[in-house]
Amino acid sequence: MNSMRRLACLLVLFSSFPLSAQEASFIAPLAKSSVLLDAKVGDYLVVVGERGHVLLSEDGEVFEQVQVPTQSTLTAVSMIGDNIWAAGHDAVILYSGDRGATWTVQNYEPELERPFLDLHFFDVNEGIAIGAYGLFYRTVDGGLTWQPERHAELLDPMDQEYLNEIRQESEEFYLQELDSILPHLNRVSESGDALFMAGETGLLASSSDRGKSWQRLSANYAGSFFDIKAVDQQGTLLAVGLRGNAFVSESGETWTKVQTCTTATLNSLYHHEDNTWIAVGNNGVITRLQLPLQQALDAPASQCDSLSEVTTTQTADKSAIVNLVSVRDQVFAVSAQGIQLLDLK
Image 1 (cartoon, rainbow, N blue to C red):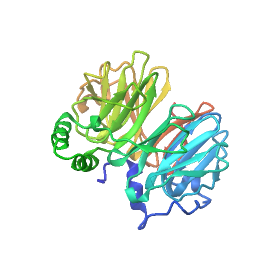
Image 2: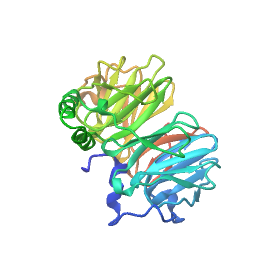
Image 3: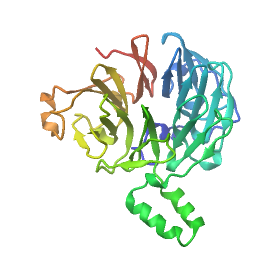
């Protein structure tokens, strides 16, 4: 994987050998300051990261690391009530049904050499896990069993045409080629009855059936996207990704480039307040976007000083920020330096 792909993928390079999911995680005194990659908030906060680190907090101030049955890097977490699922490297998926007190392994396939990069549950029974090289698993029984799916419709039309041609000759070769050219699937988000996906090589897609089938959205951009969100009640879509690239669309059909005034990779989007969305990324970049966007559409970088809709700042430690979460009106950055309180005023 090249150095510009999602931070979560690259964590495997931090060690000289893979850590086994058969070993319990180590309770580390500085786990709160370790590389953390995702967080979710309900009645409590769950944060996951490198080496199987899982931290729990009721208030965002006091964090407790809990032991889990893996040392694989965890890149994503999803929660519904007392139920928590976490996924990551070695295609591992963990589950807790008691608010994180105890954990079991639901899936572990290190031989795939493909990490999960995001995880989303629609209810306590059905959920999906997505990841590198088209990795896509679904459960309909709360994770007791996970079934792989292949989604050729996520490929660009030329690749789909190529695959259809070779499928007529050999189903086995078709499946081999499909597995070799599917892009990284980086993140999913849900809005009403719609599901959206952001991925590698310009992949944006939508689904109206919980990801059983997908429709590609074309932003006319070949770089990687790392997040896509519906940002208003009218269904306006905003997507962010590599080298500060961002695009907005009112219909999903026509996309316009947004001037973000940064070349740092943008990892995720966070709804701050009213019509304000924040994109966070590498080098501690925080880009505030005030909707509706007008001045910033297709604007050159030379106009950044005059764009009232876009404000880009940087944290003091300049560590990569993966996403933001809010706990009791406080905003926390989930970053390569751990979880940190962030002042967005």
